[in-house]
Picture 1: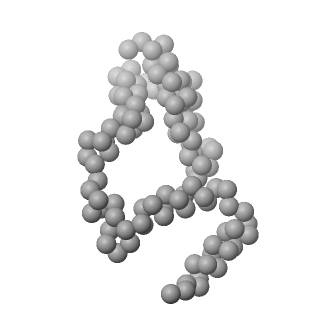
Picture 2 (picture 1 turned 60 degrees about the vertical axis):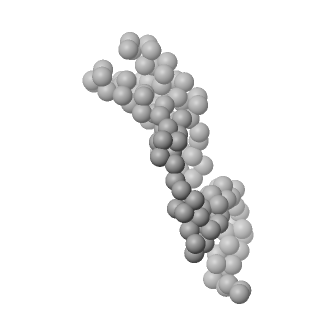
Length: 112
């Protein structure tokens, strides 16, 4: 692949890659992609492999090829564990100071 094609792929990946709301901005994958556009790696063969790997991650190829069973995703001890975890991860960045305090206090006191 030519340098221009690789740069176009990195630009496309940069546009399509979802932002991670929990990770600090300087550690986003987008920063790595921007760096790759500006400063290509020394080995030309590495770029094509990196682009291919990023597209596979973006497409969730591994999770489609190796799907997790319900037994793993819904353990008997807490069937809603991963659903609750996903909801918590979505809520955390928007929580206010008081919301964090209430969540902390709620975790300390549990009603049965």
